[in-house]
Length: 244
Image 1: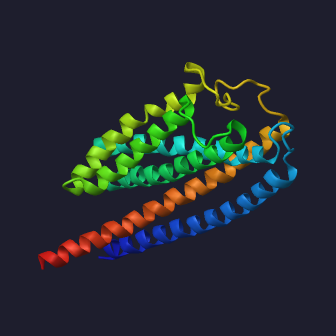
Image 2: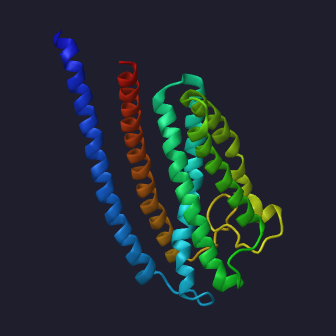
Image 3: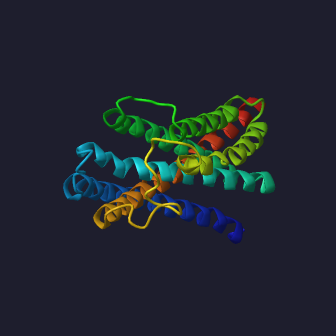
């Protein structure tokens, strides 16, 4: 009996520890974001050609990269769910997909805001923008499948397959500026970027922005997973009440 009674206590302590970790991560994210804003708008040099609009680069690039990370986590966790059929894998896949959709939406929005003064249009069907929009549609479809599937179990399985297959568009987005004729700037970070693509101070601020956005991304995923746990518990209670 003592061992059984100790299990809920350990589980409660573990949950309390996770909640504390999320709180500290939120505080860290706030500090990093404030510091990032100072670096972007005060420290970063003004581009000689594009002017101040170029500062959106320090936001646009990190959120684009982290949207890719979200879809990678979704694909891996989806595969984990198909193999193990455990709720934890499914919650991670769902949370990563939702946060990934938010980030890729922001990437599209910041991209068109940047494009308007540079290209003279809000939108053009060039390869990078088009493939990114396709990526957005794929993972919006992922979320819709989860919601409209006949049963929750089918929604989890079907969406996991979509998440795995849909990730194939991520490398297409990245390499699109090299595979097809494009007016989009070439990569400034990553395996295909030139060593001198950015000035050192710009590169350091970009890396700091990426770290700040990564902290935000991680916090949102963990928070969404916790919320999914509450939603699942409420759904279970409703089903038990209907049975009674």
